[in-house]
Image (cartoon, rainbow, N blue to C red; front, top):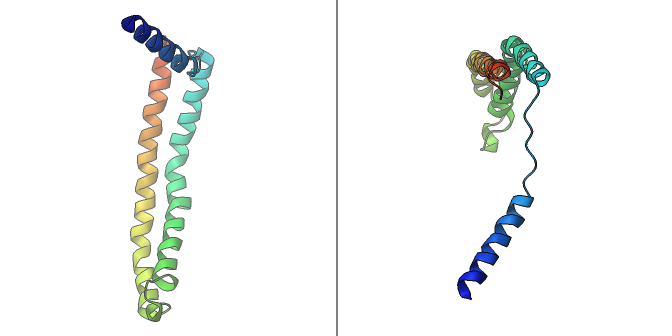
Length: 122
């Protein structure tokens, strides 16, 4: 009797846990093409986003930290930290540009995967 009870309980637990999963449907070829197009557009735009958005945002955040948000209050707003904030600007811009290039490679890979899924019946 114990073995039958365990089998029934395990079966019920498995059935209940499987009922919480959502149904999975394969994407249509049209949907794969749409995703491929989106990823190709993101691939082209991401270097410009890195140069024109991410880089300046990083520069602003670094300068704000160096000048206004230092841990020691007596060091805030000093001229040398303002100069150091300006000195960090090219490095922050380069990091933003590299981030955009990395995103370009990522989106290119996603686009290739989506396009390949059309022909090999995802």
